[in-house]
Length: 93
Image (cartoon, rainbow, N blue to C red; front, side):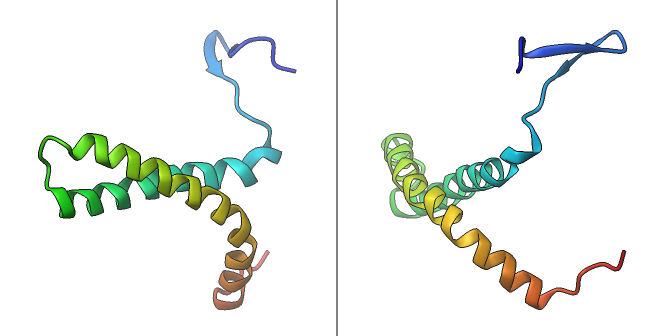
């Protein structure tokens, strides 16, 4: 159980990390945030330009696309891993 956000290691402050079991959620979370932000910004800019209403329209478009992308990634990621495993040779131990 974490008692504080930081711990001290060797006289320096170190931010504690999440346990490894959260990697399966954190990776698609970060990926979906970044990808939907980029794609929705490009799409919004192409349709509206970088004028006045861009920021408001982009944040709305990003929020909606993220609400679709994150659960989609959670569902399709196992399939993607299998496809990649079938296409890419695994390193030898």
